[in-house]
Image (cartoon, rainbow, N blue to C red; front, top):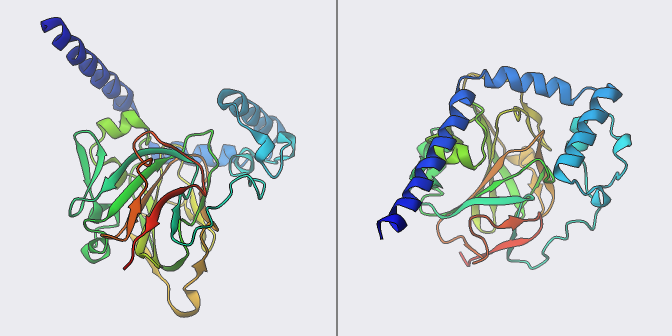
Amino acid sequence: MFKNLIKPISVAVTNKVLDLLFIAPIALLPHHLLSRVIHRITRSTNRTISQFLISKVCRAYNIDLSIAKESDPKQYLSFNLFFTRQLKIDARPITATIDAVISPVDGAVSQCGKIHKESILQAKGHNFSLTTLLGGVAERATQFNNGLFSTIYLSPKDYHRIHMPLDGTLKEMVYIPGRLYPVNNPSARTVPGLFARNERVAVIFDTEAGPMAMVLVGALFVGSIETVWAGEITPPQRGFVHYWRYSGDSALTLKKGEEMGRFNMGSTVILLFGESAVKFKQELKTGAELKMGKQIGTMQPL
C-alpha cells in the first residue's frame, strides 16, 4: 500500500524539480535582447543562414510543406518568411455553420473552461488575473467575467498565422509590456501568472456573441507580434501599456476565418468570451490538437 502511495508522490516531486531546473536559468536570461538577436537572424536574407535554419526545422519537426502555398523551401528568402508561410486555400477548410466558433490557429489546448469571476486557470495550482492579462483596466476585463477561455499553444511545427473565430468588428487593441518566458508546459506549471507576466497584445472585437478578446502572448525568441491592420506591434518593446481604440472608419470588420495577425516564431493565443456567449464542444479539452478552421464551439442566443 505504501509503495503505491510513494511512487506517484516521487514522480510528482521529480517533475517539479525538473520544471524548476528548466525555468531557473531562463529567468536570469536577458529575454528581450535574445529575442532581438533572433529577430534579426530569422529575417536575414543570407541564403546560407536562411536555408540552414529552414532545413534544420523541417527535419526536426517533420514539417509538411505539401499544404503550403509555396512548397519549395528554397523559394523562401528568409527563415521568417518560411515560418509564417501561407497555406493553400483548401488546406484549412472553415466550418461554414453560421453559429460555429472556429479555432483561430493550429495548436494544442493548454487549458480551457470557465473564467471564475476574473480568475483564469493557467495550470494545476496556478491561476492568473483576467484584469492583469488585459492591461490592468477593470472595465475592459469585466465584460469577460464568468465567461469562457481557451489557451492554445503553437509549437514550431504549427501554422503561425492567426485567424478570426467569428465575424468581428475591431474595437480596441492593447499592448502590454512584460517578460518573455517560454510558454510551454514546464513554464506554465512553474511561473506564477505566466501569461499575465509576458509581453502581449490583446485585441477586442464586437461579435454576434458579444465581446470577444484574442490575447497574443509573446515568448522567449517570440518578441514579434503583428496584426493585419497595424503591422508589427512589437518590437520595439515599450515600457508602458499602450492602447488603440477603433470606431467609425477605423472600426475594421473581419470575417470568420480571415487572417488577423501572426507570430514571428511560436507562442500562445488566449481566446476569451463573455458569460453565456458561447458553448465549447466537449472535445475541446486540455491536450486536444486543433487545426485552424475546425469548430470548437457554438454561439448561444443572446
